[in-house]
Image 1 (cartoon, rainbow, N blue to C red):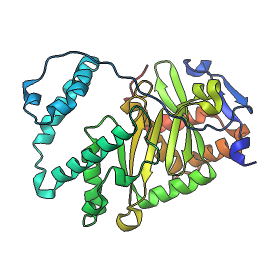
Image 2: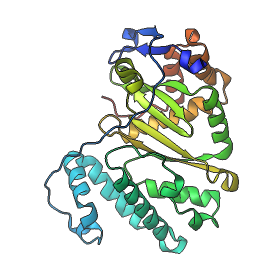
Image 3: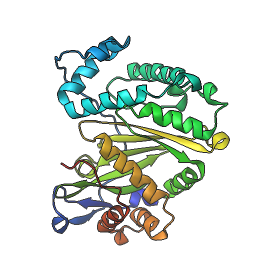
Length: 302
């Protein structure tokens, strides 16, 4: 039996302040097996925006626009402002317009193939036309990648090849870790488990109550297809919006690099202890590292 299977999971009382947190070892909790999470959408009736109606693709996104405007008016306003900024950036000269159009087409195919669930066997080729970027540098591809996902309800990243090599190497020996999200009265903990180059997250309370059936609430996809040729690894994510916001997903993703790509040995020691020396693991040390890094600042609290 591997160290991961025998590792005692840290169980932490939720919705409490620092001083009220209770850490308990529970050897009976088995390793998380990520599941699928269905999404439920609500429809709203709103008036159209004249500027948006002029867009030939308005009808395609009309329902999504209605839902966003009704459920998240501030986010809707911010997106309109961001859209205006993006329109000022000419796309034609670098073929970004064609690039984004093709990515939209591939994403539409993927969404139709697996509506309301996380995508299985998701490949870079299902998002990006690899032939189209062969003549571009890693920096150019990274800029296109980040530009495309900047208007999506998800997160993305461009990771240097050497950084990802360190992360994935450590993930093989230490596939699980406990991450913290800031809340009004303390921190909510999430379990993260690597499955190849995917990283699945679910709240610790899910693990406590559902064990190995706990569903994934966030999945980070890492694509190393261009690592050798361009020295970059592209990352994007899918999340269950009922439980995790984009800001919270970004906080968790930043913590992955904080702990798995740490140059400071004491930081990575927390990951090693959680996987191989659970008796030495202290969840308050995770919070201390998070606060010292500043990663948790600005995360929406509940």
